[in-house]
Structures are given as structure tokens and as C-alpha cells.
Length: 335
Image (tube, rainbow, N blue to C red; front, side):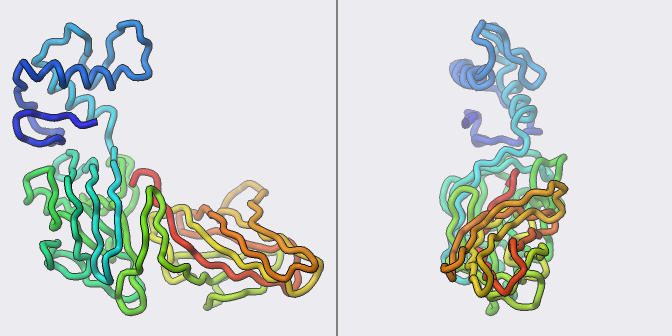
């Protein structure tokens, strides 16, 4: 829902700003929209709704409405995001479609943009992009931030290309206080991965999921290489931060995988995964092969722990092998 402030400060004025007067002819509209949203899900008995420390009812003075809007957003929507769509353009450029993000930076406010932004990730300052962008190196994750200092300089919640920042050395962490993923005052909104030549991997993004254009081979058990591996009944780590050349961004807790199961001996086997460190004794079945069937394929999703690891095993200790690849990753809660 958009709260329009008719004084020209934009849809999402800084939450810390002093509310501006609203012409009396436009107060009722803003107030009624606000009251409707607040009362959704509440008893329809005409009772008043408490918002931002103000009691909203049909008798609420018009002079309190804008202050109530501010308090309402602060109280109920900290960390609210309407995520942008990210799209690959070429080896150093992506686009970021219009979005809305709560930003707890130098100023606590909602930030937005109304047109698709072309972001030169790997060319600092090019095309209006941020001069503080880090150059693209080989086999790196580059985290996309809303740059607090650039937002302050921009002096408007309506963002432009140089308000976004690419950093590979600054990995975001979840902040309870800020209700989001931050490095200092910079808010992380996404990430891209480079290949062995320093070019951004081609990807597609839809909702919570980012799919690589081509699946990537995964090292099972930190053996030093991907490809088919003899897996037995002991759980082996699938370790994204170290064993798999950072195939998953540090903030992601869920990955999309593909397995090719090859029966080389015995009467058949099943495969299982579980989150590293879980205390429950159970696991999740991925796929199986029976005698007379030599190969089976399956896609599955796995949850990783805070270190980016899940575990994988077979039900039989024989010569049968698994080859695992990663298809893509999911955005975490709050991003």
C-alpha cells in the first residue's frame, strides 16, 4: 500500500522526519486508507484501532493523521521489502526492476525506484553506477547493497543507479535490530557470482529463487573435485563455503540440487539428505535405484546450516555412485 504525502516529499518520506501538514481535503482519503489497512482482520464492530500510539477512529482529529501514518509504518512494517527483480545483462551488468525497501541507515526510511535500473556491477562509476563498486574477480560472490552514504548524498528516497553498491569483501549478516541483512549501514538486497574469468554467471530470477543458466558440479565430501563419487551409508558433507568454490551465497539457507544416481553393484540403494547439525534422527529421501535399473535422476531442495552445509548418504555400502549438481539458490527470509 502506498501512502502519498501531498507535500512533494514522495511516497515514502523519512520516518524520522516531522510530518508535513496535509490539506484538509486530502486528509480523509489518507486516513481512511490507513484505517482500512489497520482494521483488516480485526473485529468489525466499529472498535478503534491502535496505531503508532494513536487511537484511530472516525473522530480522530485530521491533524493527527499524518503522524499516525508515520507511527503505523514504524510500528508494524519495520524491515518490509517489496523485492526487486534481478536480471543478467552481460558479464559485468545486471538490471534491478522497481522495488521498495525499508532501510535502517543514517535515516530510517522507505526507499524505492520507479523504473528499471541498469547497474554496472563490475565497472566502478560506469554508466552512473557507484564509484565504490569493487572490481569483479574470479570465482567470487559479489553482494549488492543499498549504499547508505550514497542515499544520504542523494537526499531523496527515490533511488538512482549510484545508490547501489557491489562488495565482495563485505559479507552481509542478519540484524535483529534492523530487521534485515546488513553490512554496517548498507542493506544487502541480492548477490551475483563470477566465473573463472571474472564475468558474472548468467542467471534468471523469479520470486525467491535464482537459477543459474547452467547447473554446476558439486564436490561431495570435500574430496577436492566434483563428478561421480562412491557414497556409502556414512553422511558426507556438501559444503558450499569451502568444498564447493562458493557455489551458494553466504546468506542463503536453501539450495536447488540435481542428483544422478548410478547403480554399480548390489541390489539397489536409496539416497538421503539432511541439514548439517540437525538433532532429529530422520532424513529426507531423494531418489533410489533398483536391480536392473542402472541410472536414476532427481531434483531436490536442501536446507543448509548457517555455515552453508548439508549432508548426503546412500542406504547401502557398495560401489554405487552419486553425481550432484546445484541448479540455484533461494533468497533468505527478510531479504
